[in-house]
Length: 178
Ligand SMILES: [Fe+2]
Image 1 (cartoon, rainbow, N blue to C red):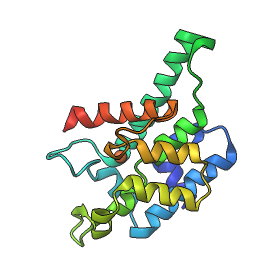
Image 2 (cartoon, helix red, strand yellow):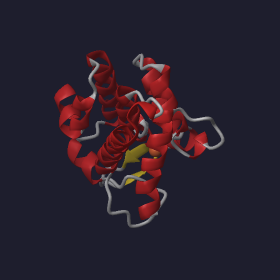
Image 3 (cartoon, rainbow, N blue to C red):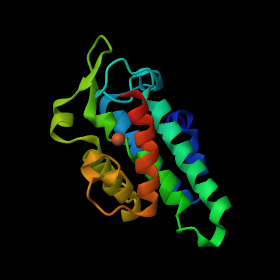
């Protein structure tokens, strides 16, 4: 399972702290196991069910947002150096990779492969199930915060620097396709 997760999300290797890396893998492994998702399915389901005709797929979206977040952090570093608002890069990457892990529970599939919102997902949208998974696997509160406030549920909350970066890159991807 660990290999399946790393194959799906090679960006996990960008996390420098080994324990944090393992916890991110555990969350994804549990999410995948809950509905027996295969990598092929995860690579071919639309990243959101909130828009029609989405041509961007779930895993592509997770990876792209993570890479955009890393790139933003790098540009800010290069531009402002010591004057930059501090960002914990590991927390930024872990939060980016886990923000949508709850979709593994929010979505379900019918026998013909169609993906739909599960009853569970109607009650608990993915930021909540994502925080639940992260809590269970001992992720730090800074990472749970990124998951919790990345979406519309976080509007009006004071976001950390990591959460600000992730929220914006996520909405770039979302608003360009919706
Ligand atoms: Fe999300």
